[in-house]
Amino acid sequence: MKILLANKFYYRRGGDCVHTLNLEQLLKAHGHEVAVFAMDYPENLETQWSKYFPSEVKFKLGTGMIEALMRPFGTREVQRKFNALLDDFHPDVVHLNNIHSQLSPVIAEMAHERGIKVVWTLHDYKLLCPRYDCLRNGETVCESCFADKHKVLEYKCMKNSKVASFLSYGEAMKWHRERLENCTDAFVCPSQFMRDKMKQGGFATAKLHTLCNFIDVAPCVADDYSQRDDYYCFIGRLSHEKGAKTLIEAANALPQHKLVVIGGGPLEDELKSMAGKHIELAGFKQWSEIKRLVGKARFSVIPSEWYENNPLSVIEAQCLGTPVLGARIGGIPELISEETGMTFESRHTADLKKKIEAMYGRTFNNAKIAVASHKRYNAERYYNEIITVYKM
Image 1: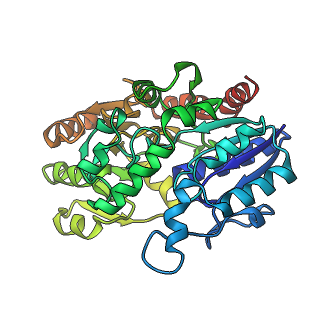
Image 2: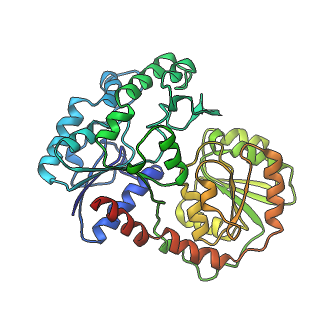
Image 3: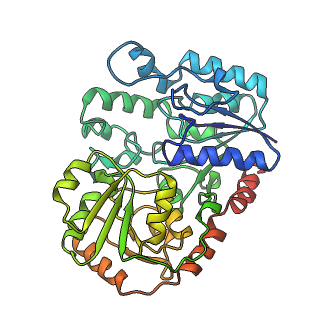
């Protein structure tokens, strides 16, 4: 089978990019021919397909601003280069990932018009929310745009800017539900929560398929999962929607327990200034260090305050045999059971503090968590299910 994967970036930038790259390798390992389509970007990995990539656009004042503003609506360059790739590669399936803004859904229509099957994995809520994250002005959980996209203008959700919000509104109105649904054969929802929200937004149930993401479990294998040090950890972006500040507030009230925070972001300096001496902000780390820190922790905390879809931070921790204390929001609770951790009320500092103490009082079978997680999240399980979607 010949499969064309599309994602706005082609390097390990975020969860959508990691998934796309892992899927490319998985499909190739099973003998499929795979091409990729992305925006030209300095950090992209080398690939024979880069000659088809449309030029980089920057959404700020300066040269190329017009192209950047028009790109979400489907520019001539994107259409010309995607057509050339379709002509040369002749895919059986076009599998879209995160394509809005830098590529645009025009490529879904182009593939559909040629009779090519279109599958779309949803990594965020862009098809429902012009902001993509269901956060009003980046702070309050909001679903108003599910039914009325005009709300993005009323609340100025994009950077608190009328202009930016107007552009997002225009994009949402052009790529409305009926249009996207008509050119997409299957929407892959990595969580049941995502599927439920898509159904709530009016998308046809028959086109919605729940399929949890996968990882390469091999790097998570350890000789002894039971060896734990006396600390708990957080891994992720230090930003409001990830709940980093709420976690620090709760941790400050528990000086007897060490917290290791892995990652960087816009709140890093603020969190350093408010964190007690028992809290270590370790900064950004590569996988080898992440594996050591998360793999030795008593448990990991995922304190998100937005509709997390299918967070790799939960999956990777569990594959390392590390229990997870996760916020009850988005797709997080679907990944956590009584045997693998606990949940708490999102944005609720007191409940988080209480559950951190409760986690220290629990005994977990770390090896059992790892074995079950390797089975649940392994690549072969995903491959068998995604191939079924391709062949439907």
